[in-house]
Image 1: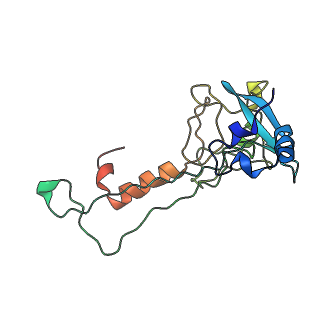
Image 2: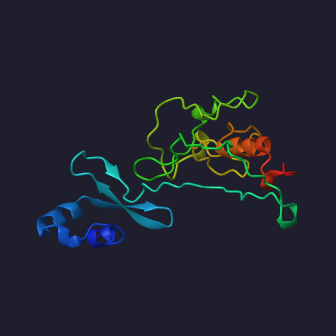
Image 3: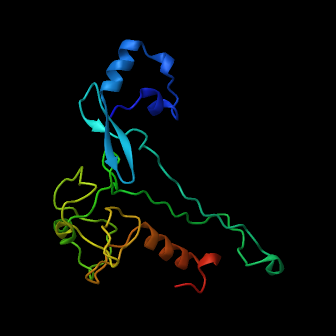
Length: 192
């Protein structure tokens, strides 16, 4: 199955007119189509380095929570104005996808390093460098499953409860909840 370069470029800043017919042919020959979930996805072989990658996987996401200043109890929850206040900032350190855009699932050998009784380090220790796990593993016996028997994607965003009742290390979400409780943020008062 061939994948037209025009389809690959439709949501990018590149225009097909930027390339000669010869370059278009070379680029299209570097596109392969793999089954990725419910629909086929294009993968491109880098003409310089030779590695295969899934285009358009470089999206970064930022989340911003704000709380308005309020010194008047009549208008809503109190949040007195402060000249200096702490800010919670976190960066995801564990990649959840490889350079092809495929999810990285946690293998059992990676999960062996987790000690649910140890203080949180906000890091998942991986037994060996990992840059790719199969999207559709042949056997689930080699992979960590969560309490719903789903594959666990490698990340440090939040903690999972695993099939065996253990938990993965706390992540960014748990650290933010602790920060919000310690700072008395109005939207966390009285919540677990």
